[in-house]
Structure formats: structure tokens, C-alpha cells
Amino acid sequence: MTGPKVIVGMSGGVDSAVAALLLLRQGYRVEGMFMKNWDEDDDEEYCTAEIDRDDARSVCSRLGITLHEANFAAEYWDNVFAGFLAEYAAGRTPNPDVLCNREIKFNLFLDYARLLGADMIATGHYVRAMHANGEFQLLKGLDQDKDQSYFLHAVPGEQLQQCLFPLGEMHKREVRRMAREARLPVHDKKDSTGICFIGERRFAEFLARYLPEIEGRIVDVNGEPVGAHRGIAYYTPGQRQGLGIGGRAGRPEAPWYVVSKDAERNELVASQDQADLMSESLIADEMNWLAKVNPPFHCAAKVRYGQDDQRCFVTRHGMGIRVDFEAPQRAVAPGQHVCLYDDERCIGGGVIVDALSGTQRAVA
Image (cartoon, rainbow, N blue to C red; front, side, top):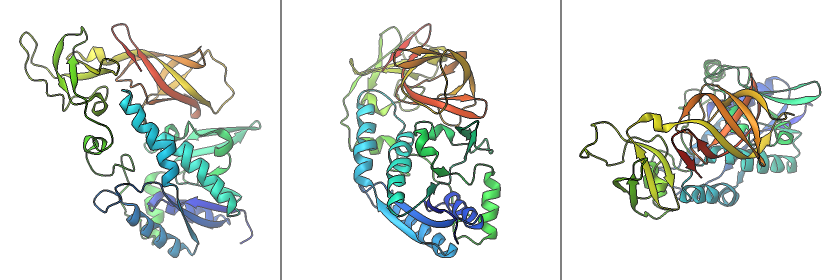
């Protein structure tokens, strides 16, 4: 083949396998790259890296392409995991998958691929990329149930422009069918879920290995004590299970929910009224813009992956933005990301630092 050389990030799953297959059929010179990003606690019970690497090898063997391997575990620790721990210790709720895409999968991977002579890189993400009027655009994947633009909004546009997304126009069922027809060994492999370095274990069990349990009070929205917590890092806004708050004299028999976390006081704020979980607005910073926009403007937003688009109004707030929603949003978590959309186009996003409502203010 004489087409451009493309190196595909091979995860060992069906999506990257079909991405490589499609590019081969389109005439590209395709090679694969398996990236190992986690060395700590690298045992078979929780870490699937060895299985994933074997699956990536099997796919590349089936396709007749070279598989390169790179270990980015040190960079992952420094650029993703250390920040993940610091955010949790400070009472926020970070999203390491967004950071991994920005720091590793579209940064180090791209640089490494260039050293191997690649013209472009490719991944199995369900997003679309195009140029219109001389401007790069990142669009949602055609399969709305699998769209992954939320996870890519923090990647600089100049890096995204050097990546191909072969699955953007496909539905997951088509990907599975194509993999089965091509007899790819991962055609029926279960999709991975959750954070890569945690695997199937319980989140609190994993976090306890790296952050000390510092017990403190659980208080209601008026500051009255209602229980005790094991450490605010182990709880997230909106959480209902695991609070250990039983019946309280003078309180209704209703569930308690985490409203916010006060790291300075080491207090967890909880409520039995779900209205206390609702926020009309948020403040975000560390913005990454993928479109030439200038607030104020109306658009749509997501405050978590898989959420339906929420109509909102965006204005400038210092170096960041303020987002005012048409409808209140439940459990907006400082440390998470807000992603902005103009219809199908992802126009950028940033880190949530404050969630605002008429009854409470969760300060990061």
C-alpha cells in the first residue's frame, strides 16, 4: 500500500480492532500501538493489561499489521493519577478519563507515532471530525448512545486534527457485526467500563490504598450534625448509599444524599430533600475551546458523560465561564467537567469549580 501511514491506538477491544480494519480497507498503511498506562497493582485479579495486550496482538496478527508497544505508566502517574489523588483529597471529584485523553492518548501517543513515521493516528472513539469553512470541527458520534465527544473536549484541537475516527459514522451493532464477519478474535469481547486503573474492585477499597481515612462529621444543610464519615474523598455529590445515617429523632424516614463536601472543615453535607442537590448554574475554568466562540451565547451542555444535552446560557467569568441552565441540574460535582455543544458540534469545555443554587453553594 502507498497511502498515508496511520498508527491506531489498539486497546484490545472491538472498537479499535474495527477502526484498524476500516482503515486498511480504505487503503491506509496501518500499524497498531498498544499503550500500557498502569503498572501499580498489576495483578490478574484487577488489572486486565496483559489480557488486553494479548488481544491486541491477536487482532493485529489477524489483520496482518505490526503492533508497537509503549509503556506510559510513569507519565500517567505524574500527569493523570497524581492530580486525580490531589483532587479527591481536596474534596473534588475528578474525571481521569478526560485527563488521560488529553495527556496520554492524544499527546504522548501522537508524539510516539510521529517518531515511528506516522502521518496520522487513529482511535476507536465514537466521534466525527471534519473541516468546514476552513475550520476544524469535532462532532458527536452518529450513535448517540455511544458518543464519546464528552471525553475528548479537553484535547487541544491541533492534536485532534491529526487523528482519524473511523467509527464516527457507525453504530455499535454495526461494529460488532463487522468484527464478527471479519472473524476478529475480539468480536464478542465485553466493553470495558469504569476507570482503567481501578478495574472491577470497589472504588473506596482502591482509594484507601493511596489516601488516608480522615473521619469527620456529616452535617445537614443547616450545619447540624447527623452522622460521621470515613473521609470526604470517599463520597461524591448525589451519593445515597454508604452514608450510614439511620433514623434520627425528629427527622422523616427518608434517604439521605450527599449534597457537597467541605474540605476545609472536613465535613460532608447531606440532605433528605433532593431539591438541595439541584444547581441552576456553575462556574468552570481551565477552558479548552474547539470552536471560535465568544461568550455570551446560548448552547447546550453536559455535566457528566451520558447525560442528555441541557440548554444553557454561557457568559464569561474571570478566565473561565459561568453556565446558567434553563432547568436545574442534579448533583453537579466540582472537579468534574462541563462540555459545551452547538447542536452536534463540541465547542469546548472546562473543569467545574463551583455549583450554584438558590439554597446552597458548593465551593471547590
